[in-house]
Image: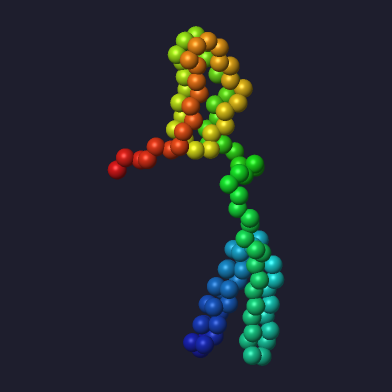
Length: 104
């Protein structure tokens, strides 16, 4: 086969692979013959919000019983879910703070 045929086959294979990998993100794909015109439309970017209700927390603090004096739980992590804890006594606390910077 000639060199042009090999180049065409390689390019065609690359296009097919890219279209296959991006098939869920593509809205329309258009090829026209003759002058070789091609078009591609994708879905718009998803709206990003700070509060994502479907996202699960990275840490769950749940079902703890702090009974007595000066007891506490401290978590330095973002995206923490605190629920269903029982605190009874003096100076009981659950502290949730931002991530600690990683030491180098």
